[in-house]
Length: 143
Image 1 (cartoon, rainbow, N blue to C red):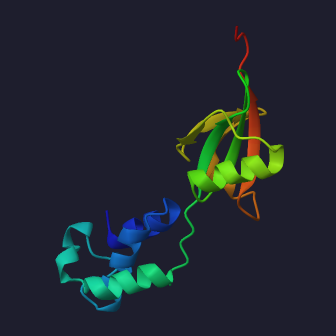
Image 2: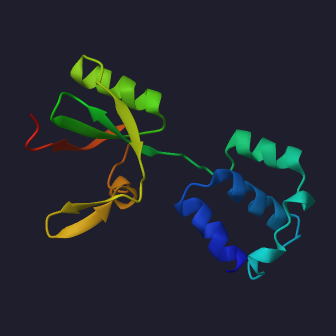
Image 3: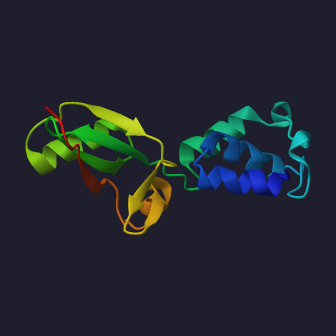
């Protein structure tokens, strides 16, 4: 794998820390986009500069997760949010009660939609603002 592919994966998978390190090493000409990733040596980085870029979010990373919040014994709502706390607060604002529980799912989890399957990661691209309700799930046969 080359640096360019890994760098692009940092954006796709929201791996901000690694993204900032690669960005810094590229800017300092310690690596090139065409290098093999084995050439990446994080010890060559100025950790203070990387920390400042990270804190200032100069690359514009916005981590979003998907959370399953239990409404009752059979009903769940999936909410895109920046954190578990944000998902719970959004739920409370929408439904005027606390969820029974809240669990984070992988954005790569696939679910059926119509005749196709879609991941939460791909579904997230359909939303202009976060937090947002991604959908509902009803557990059948619960006693």
